[in-house]
Image 1 (cartoon, one colour):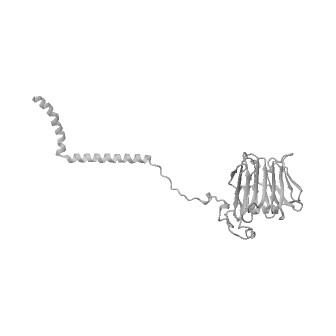
Image 2 (tube, rainbow, N blue to C red):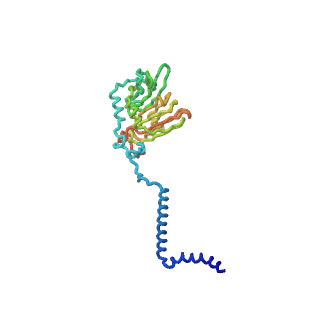
Image 3 (tube, rainbow, N blue to C red):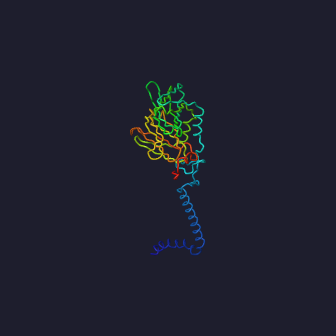
Length: 326
């Protein structure tokens, strides 16, 4: 009995001896425990912060929502600030057309007669065609001949007043030789003046393309209208396709069903021979209407925008000014 008591009591005495320093001097042990606990807490906090930063999104550079004016382009027909100081005021359009007439020798085409201009140089890829009268109506057929019995481009042009609204167009003439034929289908009392000359790389077509930069698709049989405010003196028009034939009608309206200018256009290849034109729009209430007269399988791409902007031009001469439509 004594030996069993000694064996079972020995572990108990050893445990008491091991715990005795805690009761005799508990302060150093408590400080050690506190220090170890603080170190462990700091380590855990550092690990937590490091892990959180790993999943945090990267800092972005400060951004601004301000839009530079050079990156924002407003249509002139929607811009209420256009005028003598507008973005296209005094543009090259008016001076170019005046210089063409001043530096050229117009050919008079009498009513019912035909005149032709031949270009044998294959380097001439486009030709300017300008028509006007002394204030009488203008009614003409314009055709491009390339080879025998081949007419890849033709137009029917009608203008109510050939002096107030001259006809200005550029037609493509790739792969010469080419011949431009103008027939005055009006009466003998209605002659017209015609200028046909090559277009340079920086000529009329380049000026039109620099202005009419936005295009929209017009499906076959559909139409689009483009109203312009009275400060717009002329409008740039570009019609083209993806290589298919181009059939269209361009109308200048001033008032309900009041056609001031009509152009019926046909082009064999709207990509190879795009159509460029400048339509004079004096006065107020001008609307350009583009109609795709081809079937639905032949869409076209139209670019219509202001070409020359002035102070209103002959707006005051049109009569009573009721208001301004923008």
